[in-house]
Amino acid sequence: MNYSTDYTTHSEAIADLFASTFTASEGAEEGALIGALVRRLIAETAREDLRVFIASEDGALVGGIFFTRLTYAGDPRTVFLMAPVAVKTAHQGKGIGQRLIMHGLDALRQEGVDIAVTYGDPAFYGRVGFQSVTEADLPAPQPLNQPQGWIAQSLTDAPLTLIRGPARCVAAFDDPALW
Figure 1: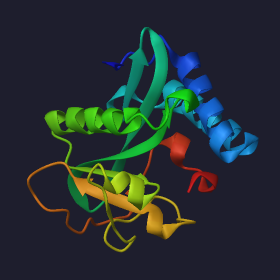
Figure 2: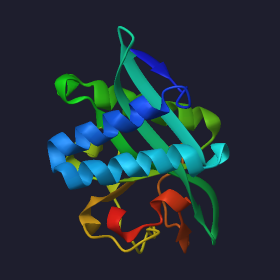
Figure 3: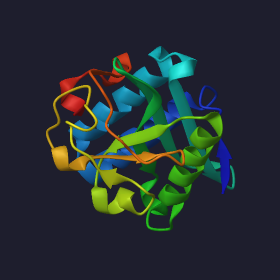
């Protein structure tokens, strides 16, 4: 597996990967929503607020993951939201997603990021170190439709502790339909 951060060269292929993967698992409407989100993240998000990691095998794109900055008015720690994550349907179930997530989290650790959060299945993301948090402990930038899916992990030796809000996300994520 080869990993890269060169998302600008492959932006359309990455958007297509996310759209097709989410269409296959969640339906056409969700695929269109996530495909549009990925295009906006790539086109509109400042480089200092965006990290993208892609995985390829034999020169073919098989997965991708996005991290975007979350800022908290009352807290100086550096926090990134991990979303969305996609692995090409034909390559799922082989551990590619978990390895891609670990690769991205390791890169953020090396960069000095304090906390990673995501909004997804606690059972799946628990395998890579995420734990459930409440919106009182770690405010979300939008009201959550599935609060049990709000999960986080410390990327430092310090334990995960209360974060003071309010939270602000990048513009592409500031849409209640995504939460």
